[in-house]
Length: 121
Image 1 (spheres, rainbow, N blue to C red):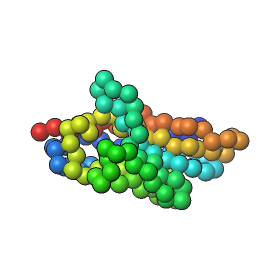
Image 2 (cartoon, rainbow, N blue to C red):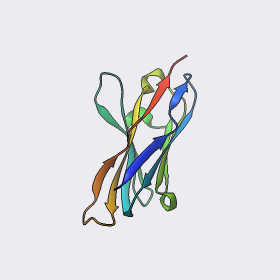
Image 3 (spheres, rainbow, N blue to C red):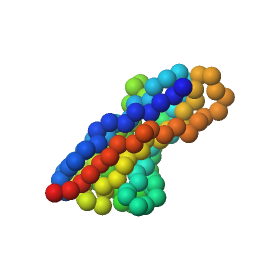
Image 4 (spheres, rainbow, N blue to C red):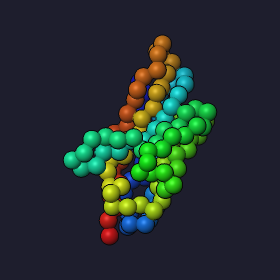
């Protein structure tokens, strides 16, 4: 069974920074794309950023220039560096990955449990 475990959320003041991490564990053969999504109170889940196994990235408009996604393939870990945080960035941030388990024949869409980021003074 494959799991994604996020860490790094918390309370930060406007203008501050946070770094989220998400580690995949279990019997893994390969991980294709990895990404971050978020869900603000009363809103739907939205894309924040994606990164392929080759390092190509894609960002939602809201995070361009402020957020940076990266990954360490050797550690099966994806990171999200968030700078110049705004109150509207307050949300639960979820990690997502397309994972090929050792016992599987196709990639599965796996989600983490989420980590809360609160931007407030």
